[in-house]
Image 1 (tube, rainbow, N blue to C red):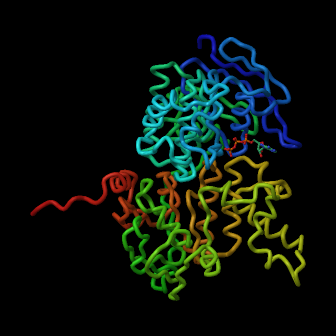
Image 2 (cartoon, rainbow, N blue to C red; image 1 turned 135 degrees about the vertical axis):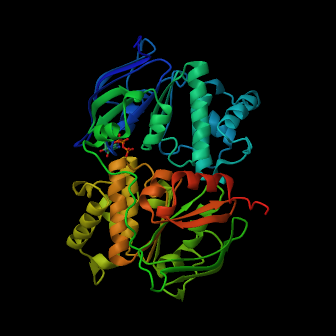
Image 3 (cartoon, rainbow, N blue to C red; image 1 turned 90 degrees about the horizontal axis):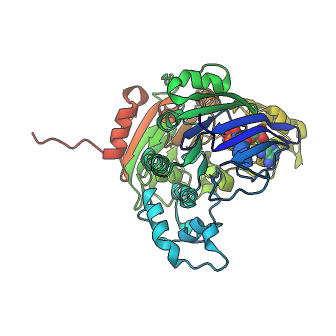
Length: 502
Ligand SMILES: Nc1ncnc2c1ncn2[C@@H]1O[C@H](COP(=O)(O)OP(=O)(O)OP(=O)(O)O)[C@@H](O)[C@H]1O
């Protein structure tokens, strides 16, 4: 490799007793796309935050573009820019102001006009042609806010661009647009790009080299072309896992359906749907953003105004808001975990049992032993380290926070569990543990699970029935063995097959 554009040596960082990085080295070549892989909590975000100067390491050295960088102070954004994992978009500012926030060009007096044309171009390039520069960020869905975050990183024109799970909330079409922009930045401007992703197909599609971290240490750096799925997974978690196998369905047939939808519609977003879901069935709702698949899921939790009737075990419980949904035994896990999923500044154990306090207390007194027992069981089931139960959720890595929000919903013992992007940011090993846990809940308790996901691998690995959506209507409803990735993609990108004239 010619002289690296970025070189870090001996980076160490501990948070209390947690050793996030234990002496990490990394070199980035100019103009390469470099993937960072590793389990949840391996230290990827910590590394990226140290490189950007947002976290002060305990030890280490960093050089960028031939300059020694003072650690712990934000690096000039024209040199290095980060697209963070948790959105830093300010809801009540416009799209333009969000992109320009913190830009060096702004100076002391912020006049918007000179920047409009350039920012328009950047937004168009990431697929936000339809979004006005003056629209308030809060009016946009999560995926579009994520695209603005990416646009902000691109607009800085940095020599090194670090992206921490930029695609976690995006669907395939959007991801392709973002990747096209990244490839263009590399080819035309020689930008060096680092990308963290748990979706291995993205790592293979985009990167030139990959670095793997495990428990805060460097495990390997290799050319992507020299790796296979299996060798990469093994480097990340130390053993092989089964991917792509069709798990047996636990759906109970010949009994009253767990969920029945009768003429259920979300005005303006989903045309009327009637369907039954059996106890123990795990059903994936799949579609592009705006296809109605996610709106349908939210409507079942009382989060979208809907028409029609929703029955559980044969009784009409049509929820008009989330409180009614919970009361009926419907639990919902949001895709936006920081805002709606967990209490960040409360211990993990407290979070897990926060919605079932009545079950871990007697005569109004909370029973610590009961909390510990319940929380430990949930932690085990959802691959959370039980030793960390007393720590605040905010000290967990992103993927581990997601596991807490799943455990918290499962604690309710619901009849119907609704999951929006169930394993967003969760590593590949923990993902398969979570799918196993969901399957055993479905089998043991007859729980019906409906989930919306933009990750096709997740749809194929976790479901036993798949419903595809296109432009607000169901295209196909089929058992998992009858579907594959091509069939799903065809449905969600093109809609139903056109009838050929006889
Ligand atoms: N502010 C903090 N306080 C305490 N512990 C922290 C803090 N930030 C990170 N950690 C811990 O440091 C370790 C590394 O976390 P980091 O976020 O870097 O992992 P990651 O590889 O990015 O994980 P993920 O894939 O889940 O995002 C984890 O054990 C995490 O809990």
